[in-house]
Length: 267
Image 1 (tube, helix red, strand yellow):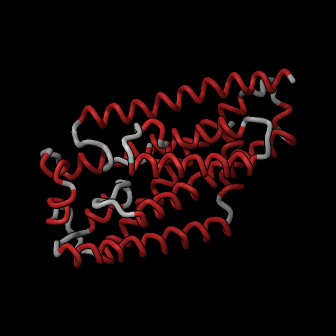
Image 2: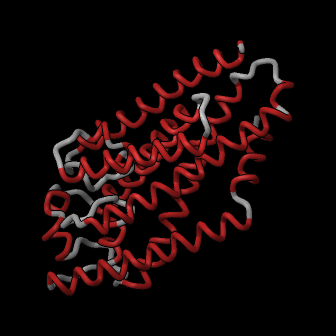
């Protein structure tokens, strides 16, 4: 099993794909940073690198503008593309290596493990680049600023330490990304063209994300915002509820995947 996971990682993170991913993240992060600097000038407030992480990795802009939604959707699009790649590679391994296995449902276990590894790796890369660019563009200060006080008052007034807030952002980002990847993997198990299924899932995600931002639609129906922490209330109950919700989706998708793979095994 470990060998198959390693083969998937090598196949996904090729030199060309890795370079393109890095360039895309760096360019988009710089654009977000420049836009945030512009907000500081417009609203005449001071900000720092912590504000940049709240704005990007935290997954919510205040005040919310369509440009933020567009950049967030672009990130989700790229994240999901890597999940799609892992599924395609599993199918290739299925044709050449995996028929030797006595129980092909093991494939689904490998897929679930791969999605969790992808979630952590992409999170670490995402955070590292935004930390680097945040320190380049903003003051390297890790305290709440006047920008935070004005536009994220619930989080500042909740008496949370910066470490606690960053911990929550990390947990929700990884678990939300894992839940999102597992949902896509379930969709990709249907006997249709994977590209068509991927595009359909992304389009539905875009529609529900816009509805979530501009209406009162529940977060449960907006999978692209499972990753967002700053869109949640600042209390601990909301954090625990969001985390458990993400993990329940992972477990539910895992069980459905076992059923579908067993059914596929009988064919």
